[in-house]
Image (cartoon, rainbow, N blue to C red):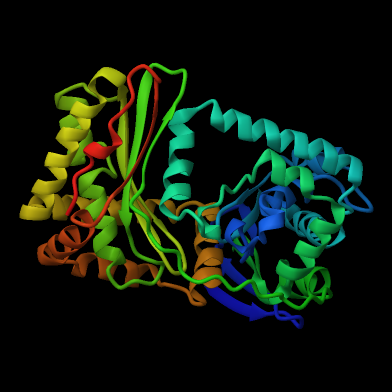
Length: 417
């Protein structure tokens, strides 16, 4: 059973009872990310994610890490452009301790200045690590350039310069403004009883009071940019993107099916034609990034610099064919079966179920029933996918590439609608 409960301070709690497992997965979902930062605090969302692990008034950073190691549990966190998540998984008998530790981290972190100085150095190393890996960095670059001038285009990690400006008062101001009860969701899935845990959760999470400070940003304008960045590497890494759809767009089900057929699986057109049949790339795939008021549909490939433009020409041909002729009945059936199967298999994990509960509540304000999702996928027609392919693939396109300086990729070879 799934239950929704609101604590006395307005924090929403989602609980799913699963009697046949021994694990409990829990997550704190916060409706803030890099797009909600002011220009002077770029990177603060991600830095804070790290700092919540760096000690409370009762536990040092080492002791916090030992809490979950000592009980065989797991804890981690992540930051996106629009939300931040802290998640843990433990045996059912250790759930009370896990709840207490998460509450301490959220509401009693001290944000020690020395720890902050050290952690900023860690994040700078993380930035350098990504910059040294163009296969990763090119995905950040396509968003930065396509949404240039808008907070959504900013790098989640920030920059060395922006991190240098962040001090403890900046962290506290951001927490007070964005880590508020009405902007957070606690989701729980596993071997747990709602009535037995709610009083405990109210005591741990219901006492804090903060009023959300709203950061208002309009929807970004998509920019069809052309960028080549030289790097001392052997391969050329290319991303191209077009405008996609936001979270609740009614065409999202057709979009996930289109993505699956085009480049979202090992049997997709891109993977089969360019990697398997021609051996011209090791990695090639597509994906869709959804935001609350925008979206990007992106294709990536990495190949030797000498043949990168040839790969792009093949890719262009595949995209034009898809926009002209759509997909086949067999491809649509296979994509539906694959996505439904993946969805059902993911429900065997308490972590995945907890994540689904938390994100649905935070981003949509409601739960999307599993059967509803499957029914919507099943309803999508060939014409739905074809109409969407025409809309997406014949738009202005943004192209970014990273590769060797002596063999620059011609970003202006990108086709136009």
